[in-house]
Length: 261
Ligand code: ADP
Ligand code: MG
Image (cartoon, rainbow, N blue to C red; front, top):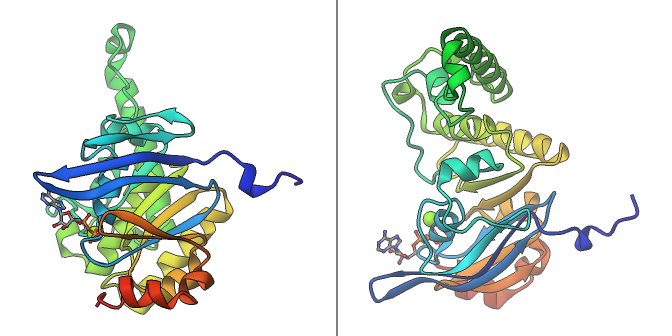
């Protein structure tokens, strides 16, 4: 293990990424490299452009300018499903499960292989699809068990708690065996017991090599679990360093985090 971590190629990069909403520039020429194997914290006051940045990276929102690179490949403009298949998953600030479907069905619903679409596949479609369904179900149940949601597998997703819905978001992300996961405020509004489960699972996945980028307002959470920390304000990168450096940076805390509830 002699390789210097800083010299590993970034798992995810953005270059001059920009998004305008009419005359308003929500993200202004942001360039960032996200280190493979890191849990990167993304902080900044409400309206800083954090979610918009995630939306552009994850293919939900086309950039007005700039590029996104995943494993060095230019993936700008690819759809979320295509990025999911390339190993990039994200969760939403406000979980949006299909409320009338079960927790298990929500996990099984994520994009997966294109079984049965080839001409030859059509001949064997029914058997292949049944096998694929069984395999997906097994994988989804394993992931639900990992997230401590297996007892809720058959519950309607609309009936679980807000915290459980956050765990479900991560469970859905894991169906793609992602190499990088973007989490948008995963701990916001989640009780301490579920937050502890969430953090343990994030750290277990990270030890196995999954990289994370986490938007979070809770500075204690960020200090404890994220390194490096990047701050956005008014659409621009205003800080990059360790959590300790962020904490020791009174200007940053006053100017950019003082307003955060
Ligand atoms: P953050 O996640 O850092 O709180 P957002 O990325 O959600 O910030 O928003 C950044 C800015 O862009 C805000 O001023 C917000 O009102 C604006 N914005 C976000 N999405 C849209 C949209 N779809 N249309 C117009 N303005 C938007
Ligand atoms: Mg946001």
